[in-house]
Length: 335
Image (cartoon, rainbow, N blue to C red; front, side, top):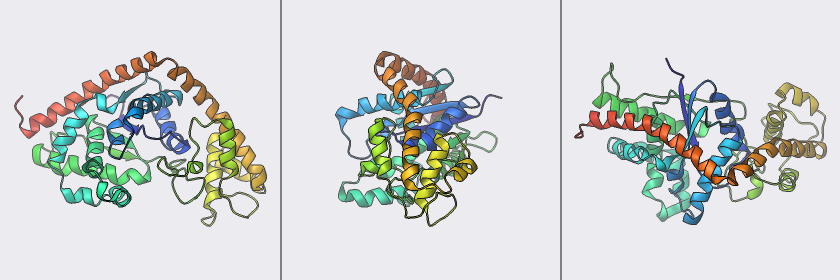
């Protein structure tokens, strides 16, 4: 038996922020020693909304560099660019042809984004979850690390695999596709906005002050934290639903300082915001410094970065093509 396989990825749109790192990438780093880990830069997803074609390639490399800078080791995981593995697009089309339209129309994220885009909403945005299903199912993933907001997309991938492919084209003894399970990591899984402790930190938020990106310089980090929304109470605490900002900022401090929630709760129980915010800023700057340093090295040697991506692509293609062949054979295509 080999190691259980994990698949995940992030779009190369907007700068990666604390939420991406603490809620996702940090966990991938821990998993790569005990799991067969595949992580991709999902650039095909990035064009489901209007994008700058002059920026896409740079952002793709930048995202890959941040994966490595955050601790993803190309000798222990496969890092690759989604669009460079052609099987993603082909499997997406095959799954499109067996996925009911009403399954996609009920997806929450499509409804939310479609309202914003109005008449300009693309078929790609509607079809985004099927491409995500193809991403996951191509690699026979046992587990998929997901946040709460992505559970619906993983459930769709599971339904497509079980109800539309395996049930109609496979057998119980020989399923065509492996049905993955969610891996939901609780601590730090939902880093919230600096402006609203009830909303998730997001790359798409038009307010730059709502998030700390992994490449923000120290002075900007300090400025954003200084302006972060707080409440009038003295002392920080966990578990009070009326104080979401205290919960969020104290959680970030706990993770970045590598101290338990009990320890930081005791440390900050009687601390005012004027004392806590500089402490959080200092801790955040220190935690991001090695990431920023390594990132600069990688972006200064793009030949090495592309070598890492080519190595990851070669590994990914072997697995992806084998899965795609199973699906093509099951659907009856001429070999």
